[in-house]
Length: 132
Image 1 (cartoon, rainbow, N blue to C red):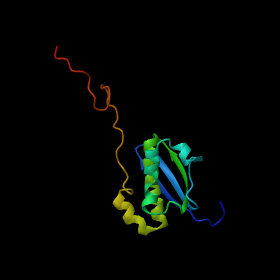
Image 2: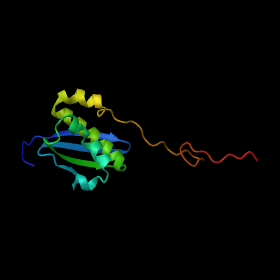
Image 3: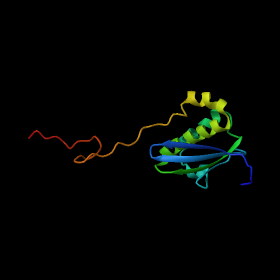
Image 4: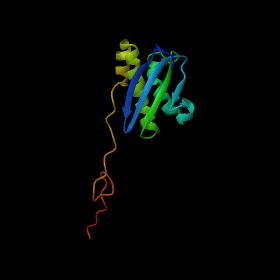
């Protein structure tokens, strides 16, 4: 990367995944962990979720995205990526905040997997009850 190149950064999180998103002026290419976007995410629904902040703000063809994502599975990573893209877009242009907030992309989804409890088969599951 050349000196003085402009880039915008955003961190996104979801479940146990975290994504570091770098927006750079470009033609709309997305690379995730060094791989092309279409190779990394297998599901069309996840691809749509990830592109949504760019589509809403009409910036899909203005930026190249370089993403480092770690932890969790594909769904959690897609959610983290969407959150990170929305935050990076705000650092690019704070006027986009209202549109992204109305769509719900700036809220960090706090839901996580509940831990398994001792003496039980799962977090909430109980062993079968027997009266006799």
